[in-house]
Length: 523
Picture 1 (spheres, rainbow, N blue to C red):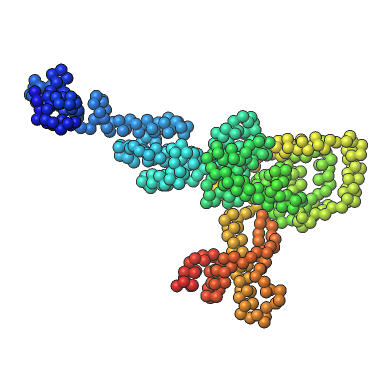
Picture 2 (picture 1 turned 120 degrees about the vertical axis):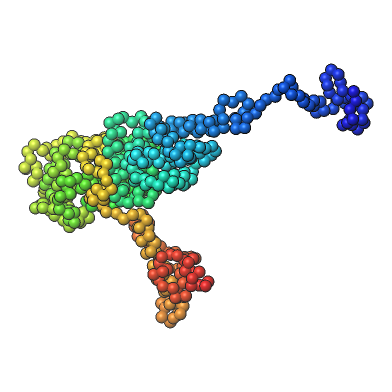
């Protein structure tokens, strides 16, 4: 049987059908023709049957349609994310109900759906005032925190709800329990660190270190600080990695916390010697002072405008101590006399920095105490003390004896209660302090620019010493002022240009140079 088609190889019309295989073969060149063996089956009821494909099925032989398969995969994804976040089974039902309500039972597929489920889980926990950091959820669903935040905003906006305030104290408690860096610490130390951490977190809230900022970096900073107080070696890089926050931001918050403690320490007699580098060594005295200051009994006393010391009680207490560098936490009255003895008949001074005691005065007080206290042995008769051993023991007693944990700041308080507490320092927000310094720096640049303009316009009035292109600028670094010579930069030239165009100095101080140039110079 020949076919009317031509051979694909020799182009001759010599195609025949092979009886055994049913393929077309060219009788001239012998090449088998591919895809030329289709046989049309046309018939009625007795004809061959094929595979019936119904519209909407997932494939041949599937028991579920497309929607059922999509819902099953979505519910499986929700269950998996709830397990990774460490939430309970009841939370799964709440998240599932929220997802079903928003999507109207259609659920979804694609990259956006895990982010959407994570946002619903975050909203459910936040609505019940439970702690779930947004950075942790964003890391689990595999997206950026900004993208995840936008999804949370869309969920909250769709549901028309208002989330409660973020619980930063609960975040600290959850962090210290979940961080692998503290997994091997004893439960007693963890309990003490919890109270200390709550104390410092709420102090940070009073000092505006958390205002307008992400809360988890300050949590990491407080974690590292209380770990150092309790002689637990942790690195801030490891804690930041475990809490999914930036290391640089954590170090910045840690430095700000130390700077606030240094300011609190200035009221102590040795406060002028306390710096950021040695604040850990002085932290027991500073924290004990803050605890007493925040206690209800201590807040009823007089103000701290003038600090006085009763040397008799102070030296007697020191002589009664058998172990150096210890803190008597049981006798609160002696602590109060140490930090505040304004009514002392022996000595009252106007400020802590004005305390100057000569060696003769101390010897006289010591001799008097020897006569009044027969049980006290002279220091000359005692055995020689091993000061290196005492130095090693300093850390032990500073982490065990100075902390009482009886202050109300060690318990979770409302924001209004935290603001009303007195912990020895009322600080401004860091952004306010930086803005104030920026205004001061721009004011000095304006004054220097005016002097240069005046020197050029009226050279006869200018002094010979002022005919230089350099000027003295007041720079503030780490709370200390120092003068340094700075060359004229682009900011000085812009300020000169604005002054020459008669722009008000109050507007220049704000620092919006581009807007002022467009308005007064280029317009």
